[in-house]
Every structure is written in structure tokens, then in C-alpha cells.
Length: 345
Image 1 (tube, rainbow, N blue to C red):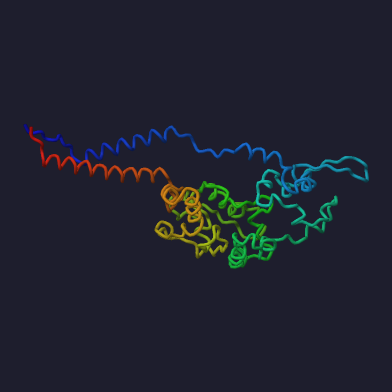
Image 2 (image 1 turned 60 degrees about the horizontal axis):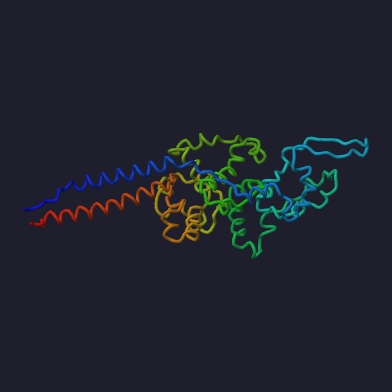
């Protein structure tokens, strides 16, 4: 008696396997809750217990006025207690300060010690404020952050060339709140949003923009109408990727180029060895590899896809399809062999 294998076409087997895999993925992802960045109890405590930070007691002499919307003092002329509204420009959020890079600093490390007297001398407003390079330049402790290279790039940028020396680091980076976001989060979109908001603080706010120029602030959306899928680019790509000269060794480029030199070719980003892989994305992959190991970090990291649409789900589906394809080929080969060599009994 001859038994013949009841074969199905290989494409039908593959299709069934793919449908099952996709169904499982959809069921799994439908049960997932939105990713929410939660704070640990330690982080929550740090925000409420500011006094544990170095120099916090001394800094509170400033925060008791500059850390809230109003301040009080005794008028020596009338001998009365007076409450005044604090100007919003000089209100410093304690929470943001103590989560910033400078949280261990004294206020008087950057500001004159003469501010210790109240009322403050009006001439103190004219004092020169130190820049990043004034404190960190030539210091081996901070060599890994490459402040000298950043300063060189900034001095060659349109920000430096078109504006006076008053355009310093603090025009973009508030010394009271600034933090290196790219090194403090593994979520790429958080870094992109944080960096882009630095640019938009001037380029989308006419009040800040006209502190430097009398020109009309251009409409960002209109100027980028040529950009395909504009919303996706704005939320998934940093402004500096297209508007700055990328440096392979820097996470954040400061050499902002004239608008005529901005990137406008799709292949500049959507190709291998693209400019998107020159700084932040390369840094994210390297960090993921160090944390997870080469294979896991490279293949399953958050920044393995070059371009505005990054999704680990797509990576997982690709691996599943590849694996199922190999599996289907093996099954097909085995069934063909059995069909060509039937068993007799």
C-alpha cells in the first residue's frame, strides 16, 4: 500500500503562519498600555527634599524670593512688611534647578556675591555672566563633553556671526534649568522634543526672537511646507539634523548653518550612513549596545531605524517574517522529499 503525503502549496503554509504571527502581535500590542515615564520614590523624594543638595541652604537665601511668584521685605522707611510680585523673568523653579546639571552650584558661583544684600544694587544687572567655556574650558574633568569643540562650532555658526557677543550659551541654554537630556534618558523622542523646544523658544516666540533682531519672525510651518509628512518630521527629527553642520563626535551640533545650506534632500537622511546617524542616533545605538550587549543592543535598540519613522514593532515583525520564511522552506523541502520517496507497506 502506498501512502502519499497530503501536501498543501508552500505559499499557503507560509501565509497561514504569517497570519498567525501577525494576529499574535496585534493581540499583544492591543493589551499594552501607553508607555508612561514613571518616577521612582527616590526621584520624588529628591524633588521635595531640596535641602540635601550641596549649597542648598545658602541658595535658599535667593530662592526665598526668586523661587516664587511674590516676595516680602520690611520697609525700613515705614517700618512695614511689604509684599511684591516677582517678575516672571527672574523666577527660578526649584524643582527644575535641582534636576539640572548645575544643581550643586551656589548662585554666587555665577552671580556676584553683592546680590547677598537687599535691595540689590541696580548696577549688578550689568555684570557679565560666565559662559560654559569660562568654567569648563581646559578642565580635564569635563574633557569628555568636548566644550572646546562645541565652542569652536558655535563661533562659526550664524548665531555667533550674525549677532553680537551678547549671544552666549544662555540664549539657548538656561543655566538654571539646563540638563544634558540625551545622556539622561533612553527614550529618543524625549531627547528630540527637548532639543527642538530649545530652538522653538526663539523661532516660535516673537518676544524672544525680537530680543536679538527687529526682523519679523518667520512662520516655521510655512517655511517647511516643502517637507513631506511635515508633522512626523517635526516630532521625530531634531532641527539641528538639517540646520547644523553635523560632527561625528558630538551628540549635539552647535555649528548652525545659514538656511540656504539646510538639508533638503531626502536621501541625506533616508539612506545608509546618513546624517541622522552622525550624532544622536549613533550615540543612542552605542549606549544601547553597552547596556544590552552587541546583538540585543544593535538589533532591538530604539534607534536602529534611520529616518523619521522608528518602531521596534516593525523590527520584530521583520524578524518573525524572516524566521517563518526559513521555517516554511524547511517544511516544504521535507514534504517534497517524503512525496518523492513514498513508504510502502
